[in-house]
Length: 128
Image (cartoon, rainbow, N blue to C red; front, side):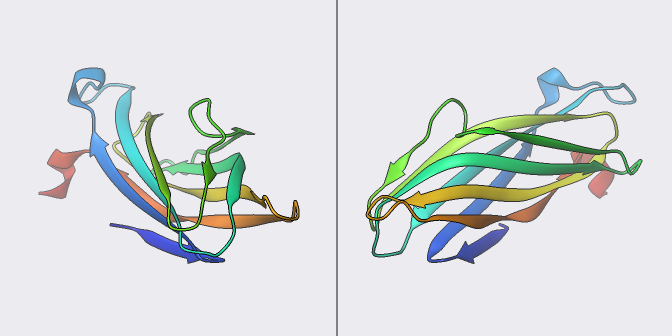
């Protein structure tokens, strides 16, 4: 499981290929990813924004940026965690994603970035 720790914030990623939304040899391969954000620091934080970098095997690059995650801007007290599931569609059978979250310390409004580790998106039959 890809994991990264930045400023005492631990990000862990799990991925899954979504067969029902995908077509072998087609133009649409759907992947789900579960992100767990764990606040191991001593301050309450709020997730403000996300910024994703997505690349497929054809070297097609795209970026996704916006407020929060799946419509939420979670606030995490020290020791708390938040997880969510989202998805990504690729034209190719291989790809990868990574990115950052913009966080804010609630005590003083200080903003900082947290790294989302790179993770692979691979159609399972390609792993043989």
